[in-house]
Image (cartoon, rainbow, N blue to C red; front, side, top):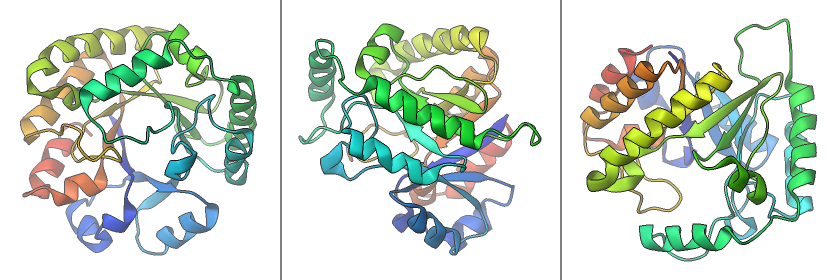
Length: 267
């Protein structure tokens, strides 16, 4: 498998510690809001850092058809770079709870995002700028999406048809379901992965969570056992590209080296 890692909170990372624990080559997509911020983080580590562009919380944090056009334009600064774009509904202002999140998703069913076409246009511009036929097997642009019905994703402006130079990444975070529902969710994810690989064998899949994200209360893997189960699920389904969430989460675990050893088995 080809592996990359997400890093949503680079301020929480001890980069020297990370370099001692992770000794294999690794691309890390680090959350930034500007090109200048990316350059500052690159000075702090030997890892190959690439931009994961996010917005301020008050502007929705992630990108979608609900994002204002002037905020979508932030992406233009990253033309020519192998950027990750997270397509998700705007970050809600309330404290995360599973029941609130499902209620929020249900409400979104009845809304059509106004700036779908504009977001697609800007992503296509980045796609053209990032594409380079001379460099084989390089990931030029990653567009993140949910494992959900396509018509819903399109209506929300959180879907982009993968073209040249673009890697579609699908978030398959089984830990979100919690220990009781995780087995059922894993079955759904397995068949969703297989279905998408039939359409595009280069599709990437995110696994996790090893640590909490911006919502702060997400369920995470209780042990390395669950991570290995998901890696086996992805391998069985035929997946060859994986992204793990997250670097800072891994470093905070009691024995980060144990997590790294599990990961190394699948490289």
